[in-house]
Image (cartoon, rainbow, N blue to C red):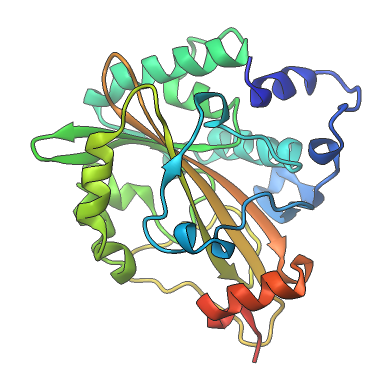
Length: 282
């Protein structure tokens, strides 16, 4: 059983975890009935892709062991409570699926429930059920013709995009509004086509925000607001790609971390500022 699954099982009880790094409390102030996260922050940022020249540039992909394709952070409990609240009260805003994606969604749920050691419910869509047990948002990418298209998604924690605008579109079309990603969309398409069942891939991005809200859907023509004088937060997405053995769909899994920029060391802050000038307030 992979580490993320063992920790998930252990967290069913109220006993403390043995692992200090993953048992530490996240910084959180939250009333989940309001569907508004006031502060769900990680106390530890395990992924700092900007420190390595190979992962700092796009697409920055590296192999990932199957046992490590999912991850549990120190913000597990509050993030999961928020995810389940969004799936219950804002389902249409965080979930969508084309009919053709159903076999892939069922296959993914079978894999996650097997690896996680839980009995999957049959009372909801399989992608929703899968996403309600893990911290990752999940996108299903299926090859149609010459390109992969987004055919299903659970996106509880989008970083300034709205999957509803992207559903059914190709990778090239999805990336076209973002200049830096549009330049590598053909590379990403080739990468997706080459992913082997036995070898997931992973990468991470790093973004600067002044609002640490996790759920930030935004239309293509809406810019992310940055308060020039506000404290900065670093939002990191650990992204993994795994090909399913039967349907051959690619699962794009996104795990979101949020930390105050003040948590970075001087060296980490300086390296990030070179790539993200808006890290420093005016």
